[in-house]
Image 1 (cartoon, helix red, strand yellow):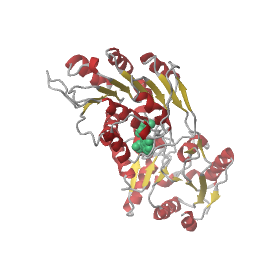
Image 2 (spheres, protein in one colour):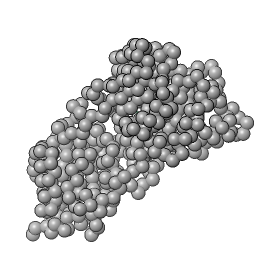
Image 3 (cartoon, protein in one colour):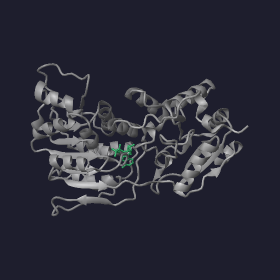
Image 4 (spheres, rainbow, N blue to C red):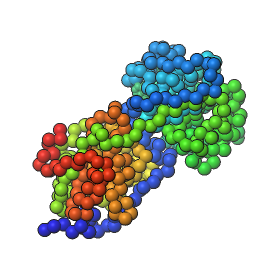
Length: 444
Ligand code: ADP
């Protein structure tokens, strides 16, 4: 019997198809992005550079050997598997490592190597013989500070004498104590507290000030002003500011903070469906849809897959059922708190689970490039049940010509969803091939 179109969302037992989890705070997006990223995002775009002092020569380092780095730091870089500087690093590192030090404002999308660049610069400026904080890095959240700390740890692996202190919630300094660590990574709130109230370190002695995720920073209440206050107490200090997005507010904030900086911008690669093979599977019932997923599961090798559901309820239902049937899957939706999300993503990244089931929480503003298979368990639709082409592109689109081939499989059940799929196909003008569930093996 033909499937009633109105039942097409019914796999979890009569829920409404209201989209949920649409928008996350900027800081969480940024964090999810970092956690999902395991590889450098290559870029084919030209780097735009605006120099405040046109007399100082610009230098592009195509190899880490071209840079004035201590051998132990170079060793750390190579141990992380870096062979050559990324596009942004080629131009940023010579500025960051220059003598005398120069200030920098740099913007490029997440994953292009900003963190690695400033961590390298921070570490290379530390004098381990001076036992006080010389480097200060501001991060907008606890979790992002920890992530930066991990990069410091990896890159500084062969510089055990360099010590790091986190200025984040739960960290305390006994009264009257002076910090002896060389690097402070913290949130503006805690850093303000330590610098102005506890006075456990001297901002005037900071030689390198780094403001990470400036876009997220100014989106966070209070951090804008605290960053400026901290910045005002710096003396004779190299300043660097990084942002993943380029908008007028961020750039205004950046230039107010560091008016004499060289400004660097790498435009983002457009998402495209060019290197994606798109398929659809026609299902007769919710059981069929489930069966399709279970079959697909059997053919996924390493690399992982993401399955998108329209609602949290469907996602939860699908995950629970797959787990009950002995499959190992991860579930991510907007109701999890930050630490639960980190947990889920780390497990997925570590290939403990090869499937990540999620809602639109993961689709918007988050790049999932290393995932090679995306399944739309539910096609993306807007509040009026119309095809949401933009979300479709976000879910399966990859950036640039460097992206690996990807596969997208759409499950349709009934005329309504077939109609949505045709709209999506017509919108992008790219074929979506029919796939029989028995032919899933052909995808390999
Ligand atoms: P961003 O701060 O712009 O988000 P990251 O510095 O976190 O980017 O880099 C993104 C990913 O690319 C990380 O996994 C990092 O280890 C890796 N990476 C950074 N620079 C290089 C490089 N020069 N070569 C190879 N991988 C790199």
